[in-house]
Image 1 (cartoon, one colour):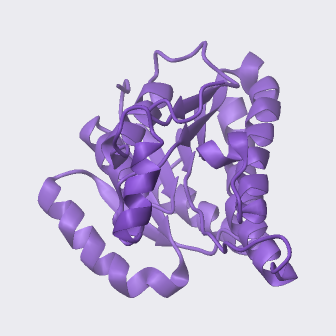
Image 2: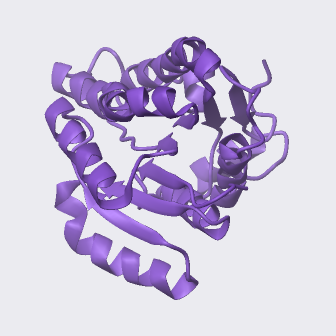
Length: 249
């Protein structure tokens, strides 16, 4: 994929999708840094040990992506330890699902800060460097529910839709400088989180997907690798749906 060793940062890198993205980019010769929340540092040691057995060049840096100041500190640490960032995958995300009627302001704020504001907080510290060097790949991991909405997810759907607004704008700002910015919008993906859904509910979800199965984290990672490639220099501002036909727009 890359000419030379690209430096890639994946926020939320320990999640089901995040892990697959880290593995895929490492397998293609990138130096990969997964960002983890400070509260996850203990489990990140175990995660890192598992990655080491796979042979890829993967490291971990801790930081709170919902905080502007901590994101700036974290990205500064990444640059200091590993060098300028070539590829950024904004994959960190949480859910706090409930209906509009029952949603507390804190549930709204938490999801917007972690899923949307983080894209600005993490990207801004490295953006100017990408423009100056004339190369950059920013890939925002959104969701099918950011495209179509979802009952009980007003906070999540708003944040995920907002991510593509960031993508389209930054694509314009980076285009003349060789920096591409794209969105990947997964549908339902088989991870520990979806495995925990009650069997009957999971079956009804799968019945509504034209491909009759959930996506695999590796399939999302393949889309990210496609967008991150050096030769993918003319594709920018796109929203790539990887949802098995669940939503076609």
